[in-house]
Length: 136
Image (cartoon, rainbow, N blue to C red; front, side):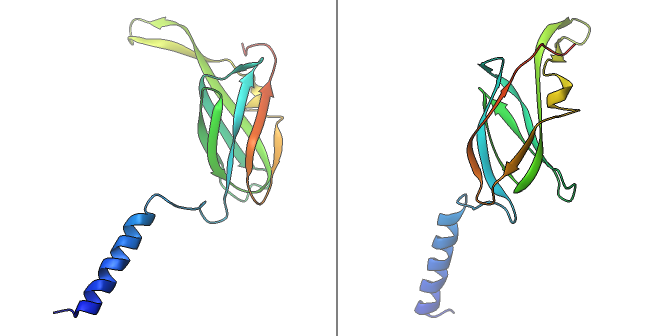
């Protein structure tokens, strides 16, 4: 049977562990990145943003864009930024679902021209103000 001191230590360790669940720092080597994305001045209602390390040595990190805002953990250094967003372009009765089309041009996603140098202590308040005609 454990001594009272051992029981107290176990209770303290358990309480500390339980109190820190969910209070995690950025994963190893990553930093917090957050900001907003607009299309022709309006917040992107829903979409995705990816930070792709330009050196090709680390995996990309992505986040959902909601009401123009995003937040993720990514890698410091130069990153290619890819942004995707869709809108309804009709309804497919056979599939019983809306038809969604990508409206952000390729120069902001598949053939991105966006680069950003993520600082080693993270980035908050980033703003990507995209402009142009809807993708065809």
